[in-house]
Image 1 (cartoon, rainbow, N blue to C red):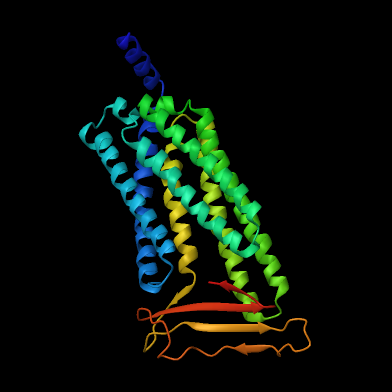
Image 2: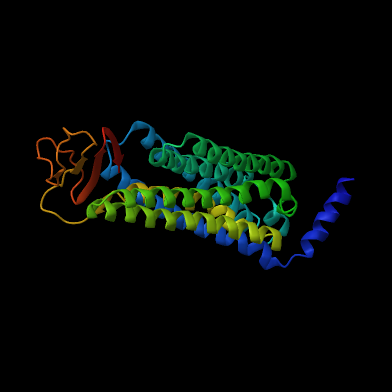
Length: 326
């Protein structure tokens, strides 16, 4: 029985060109290491610029980085087995190895964490709990698809069988890319409302920058997921390359959004937080006039960062409630 199954697997592999077996993992490991280098630079920049961020946010950043490090090391071990220890063996190229953990499980978990991060930003802007819950529901469904794919891939042990997992793969990648598109749309809509609500040029420029960055990062993650989905249905092996880099794209874009609060340059002394506080009057007759304070904080009360790092923060007070945009 086992010999029959082995012969069937060998015949299936023989019908696949060798380039379709070697190219996807080769591209996957090269792209993964390149993106991991970019992510490491982003994490170091975050560590320098924002040492006093909230504990939960720092835990998210460093936790995602640890997951990405584990994924890169596991992928490197798998590629070593395929291209080093067992060079020239097509069956080793078809072996999933630990990719069920590194690509499918860790990749799905990183995507879920980053999507929840964006959903929280949407909730802060919109205060719409129902919308946030709906998006999180679909994000969890996408992770469930990644988990199911990981379990079945570990059981089959061969990429030629993973290509047959249409249901869980479609749930993971298809729903995940849809969540990315929804996040981009919601961020664009609510930030556009924010622009229309304020007459101040500095706030307008800040929100416009956030909108542009949100669209760029969201479009990038959605594009990678859609490419992976298209390749999954059109080729038996090439989907491995974009899927292996999906987690790195998610984490790198998240760090890019966080680090967009800082501008790096050369100054003779460390710059402090610059607070721009705008207080708008309420409808009451005793309302105070509009006050605009654009002066930097004093050196004695400022939050210092590393040399050459300048952090901008804007606090807007409107009708007795505060919104903080960072």
